Image 1 (cartoon, rainbow, N blue to C red):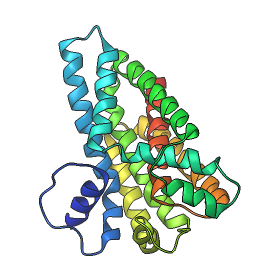
Image 2 (tube, rainbow, N blue to C red; image 1 turned 60 degrees about the horizontal axis):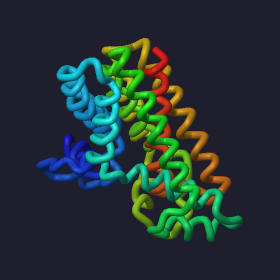
Image 3 (tube, one colour; image 1 turned 90 degrees about the vertical axis):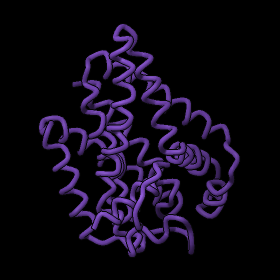
Length: 242
């Protein structure tokens, strides 16, 4: 059963997780929220330790949180943000947009998108550590990874083959129901916070899914990455406002 969690953590992070992966790769979808929660707890723990040492400098903790997130995720999701920004607004046909998104080079739209999202995260993290609401950060990570299950189930894959094809084509309603239940269960320690984080993250991810469908006729691994980053950003905004 926990083989699905091994699959999820290996896919979504660089953590050297021991154990065997799930026979069905899509069974990792059940565990995406917990994988996100674990990553969020790791990021929170490291940055909180910095806050204990220099409590008068929350900006440093914010920077550490941001850096840790990039490190443990290999910057994979940020790459999706850049590719989507370049592809969605770079050309006029779905086929050409998909070609641009496969290009390893980053264009002007991608660079701008990365700068904006990193600046926004830095601002939100600073506010969160100033108000000492850092204990809610894992929820933003959990919800953002949960939204990938929603996209996989609700949208098609626009290419014949690709990294995310197996996930999209193998997603079932049981994966969504299981991931939803797990996400809400993880938020039981903060019931008043988890609901707005959940709905904001879901709204952002689904909106991106519809945008992707109009631009490239479906969702790809890059769209998953962008959805993860943007819904996480939305969750951090909610926490910063609490």
